[in-house]
Image (cartoon, rainbow, N blue to C red; front, side, top):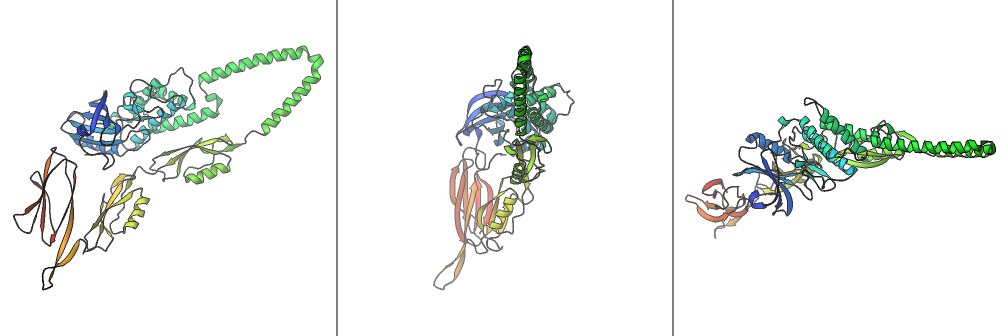
Length: 508
């Protein structure tokens, strides 16, 4: 079994990978940072001994589902499978490296809080797809100095039986470990830390939902930006100190004014009048307060225009997969619609990428350009495997893979076979002076050598009667692709044998 992008990763991991650094184990899985010789990149390689990573069908299904997950805070599963050494999973690392017990690779300042919040949103995405991680800790996180991603979703130990709430508690432990409780934090980091502490205090039976907790953190961070009473204790203490200092200075000024009150009454009156006029002038020019318009469900450009009409600006635009919101539409706004803010305030938008998984439409019977337009509406692409002889009209699609109705990841390719007409791949040749002619058919066989022995003998036999003649006999490695062209009259038999076992038989 395989995962990842078809064609990018093929072959045995023992042949492709160079193990460089062994990491702490996760359940039955041993893990390494490895170099992929085939792609020239750095990957995360996990292997579990045979019968140590769960039931076959359960582990295979979990790995297959995890390979289709796509989220900025999740590592991408490039490939997965099993061999004599047991089950294995390959995940993309790029520039990131395992976080481990230290935090030297973690982002700094407010970016750390944003990164940890992104991991919580990734957990909500995993839970929404009917899975749980089961081993959330610094040992399963990777970082590149700017962001943090969660690895190990496809491992056999990460089944739904571990529970979504356990994932949230694991995340909370990482947050408390990485965010220094005595340090000064921004709005997001403070909100993340408060939520993590509350999650750790919750009982084992408490229902902790990652998605709801992430939305509460976002809302709390926004409130802290605009409401002084929601600021951290350190900020409040600093503000109190400034207020006390200002109060002492005001008392000294008041004392000096009282001492010279009899002789400077007129001067004080003039000064106070000027101050009052200045304050009124300043207040009159402050930005006006407006309500955030309801832009949820609008297309992104329509939402931006609506905000600009109210004197608001668009800040960060985050894109996430949402099954309940059409692609390109606003799924959430922060601050939330209806809140009162000053004109000029930046509004964060969450824009939907559409459903993470889509149904394959029926393309059989369509022309290629019609199929491409229909597939694009469904979030898929079309690739042609070429023409084939068929009684269907010329140019009409006669086969497709995956089949109509299949539930696949958004962006997946659908391979189609196009009719070349009933005469495709055939010519008529004269046989002699009597001007008789026979039909000669042409055929191209595409053969991919399956996994198995390092070297496998591939033989092709052809002929009109037994015994057939051997016309191709070579050794190949697993994964080799063979294009074999043949031709002949109607009724010619063709057989393909791999290691003496017949795997294909046809006739012209």
